[in-house]
Image (cartoon, rainbow, N blue to C red; front, side):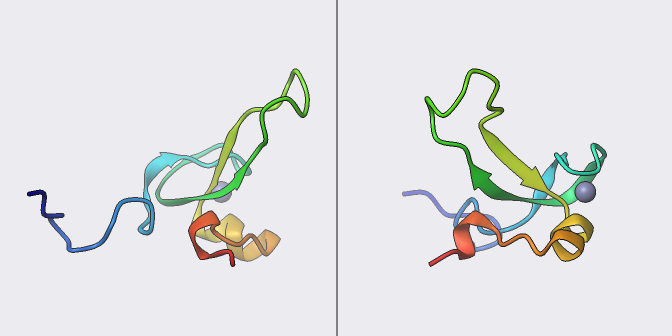
Length: 66
Ligand SMILES: [Zn+2]
């Protein structure tokens, strides 16, 4: 049995990482886009954005999309 420390499933809360948009580390980045494999040789894959950039660019976290 596994119990999350904060009671929330992984992927729904912000975590520490590099923001793809401002290229700075933040402690509230969220996964906002998953690039499909095979769409191009230079696709980066998962893209993460910090709270400030999500607001500035109108990005919707992947977990919050319908
Ligand atoms: Zn950012």
